[in-house]
Image 1 (cartoon, protein in one colour):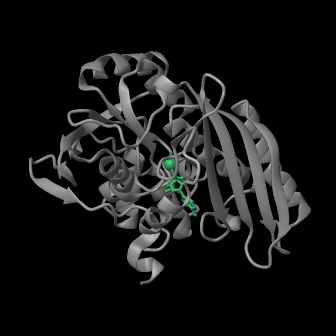
Image 2 (cartoon, rainbow, N blue to C red):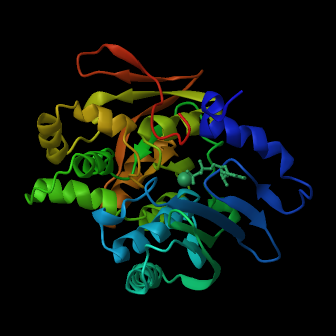
Length: 333
Ligand code: ADP
Ligand code: MG
């Protein structure tokens, strides 16, 4: 059997059982956005780590070093947000190939530390080595969350509302514009490209969801809406129905779709790296949490509901039902 046959997530399922030798204090190990641990304090400790590889996760020519540094931290903050937590400390490891110079590295760390400061995150350690090939950046971040507020992937219930804390697809469209060498300077293209290069972790939205008690589960949208919803559904033992007319599609996306000959819904459902949150919200709490979010300057989008069973269906504007196969990002497929 090859890695391509089982994919990234088949591989993770395969290695998950070997990790646990001392279960005391482990609330959640492999399989969620963060590991969740109960230590001596009143709050749970969250730990997450993400690895970025040059030419796989980022292209050096696409952005200044500062932007790559900020994104390396942000993708980790997003996993802390997915668990409802508040980030605390970061650890940065980097393997540096000969084509990277000191000025560039200074820029990377400026971007990283500015992003860390903006979220009150300390950088407390890391590791530095030489690389013979690509630049590799690994960031690990810790966070804290009250036990009653932690958001897992496996705890959604049938009848809960599928809620997005922001639109999806913009980053995927921005990435496609960059891949096709688009350097048009209109504000629409610029804003899609910015969504790809300079995502924001939804930490504020996470706290609204976690504090309210209205959310039963959450994940961040890093692989794409279809894939991340499928993770949440699988872990909760549920299916989901999405309503096309409720899913936000920004005018920028429609314009990019016309230019690149692509259905914007493709980006919305399957484009990755949005770093918005996808939450399950108790139906009776929906109105209140939408109002709370709006009062705090955030917009939540109810786009469907979780149902008993398995699989994801999209109800199109004309009433037809379309099964959605997850085909967001998988490193090996
Ligand atoms: P995310 O997209 O939220 O960062 P991933 O899909 O990367 O999450 O990972 C899913 C789960 O698998 C997480 O719990 C993560 O810690 C774990 N995981 C991923 N790769 C490995 C690995 N090589 N060894 C152990 N655990 C891993
Ligand atoms: Mg995640």
